[in-house]
Amino acid sequence: MPESIEVYYARVASAADAEGRLAPNAELQAWEVFPFESEGLRLRPLEPLAQAELPRHGEGGTSCDGCDRGDQRSAAVGEVWRDDHWRIAVAESSGAPLILILSPLAHHDFTTLPMPLAAEMGQIMVALGLAIEALPSVARVHVSKWGDGGEHAHIFFYARPSRMPQLRGTMMAVWDDYLPPVPGDVRDGNARAVVQDLVRSYGGRAAGPVA
Ligand SMILES: [Zn+2]
Image (cartoon, rainbow, N blue to C red; front, top):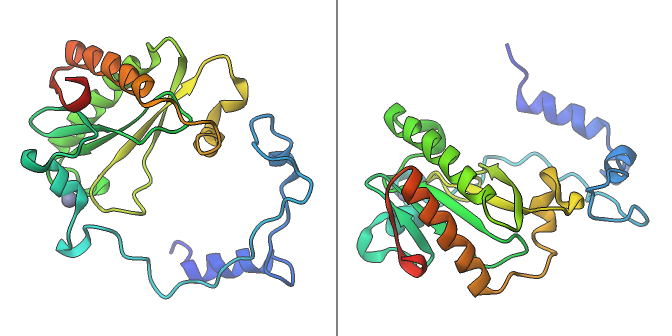
């Protein structure tokens, strides 16, 4: 029988100090991509085990932003691409040259996508990743699926700037919130180039600010 969350949590809590804080991780904090200096850095105390998972937008038939945006008539301003089953939106300007978000038009959690849609998703992810890595300021695409805020599947694609080795890897998502936001016209120019590539390589059509 796999371990319960109560046993998992008890083991984690037993590693914390009297204030409930876990020890700093010297190896992680010495990592060249770690954004913070170690002095004064400490973890927040562990919170108690919650009674239940926090509710997510769109769960149990509650109102869902993802579905609202899937409806062509109320497509959000950020939409830059769509085909018959999927849409891509551009995120608010942040430190990354571009962040795109891929979602199905219909309401599915990531883990309940019907297999034909899952197969399409894989092909779009690969074609989109290649298009993002073709941007002149970008070396790598980082792909993230979290899904703790909303049930409607949404996958993030971060454009990682080239020749800035501090921004490699998982910490890019943290660096993104500290780097100065790219100007909106730069972001849209990057999105336009990526969408044109995607339309050529996979299909679909440009929308919104890049159409
Ligand atoms: Zn939905």
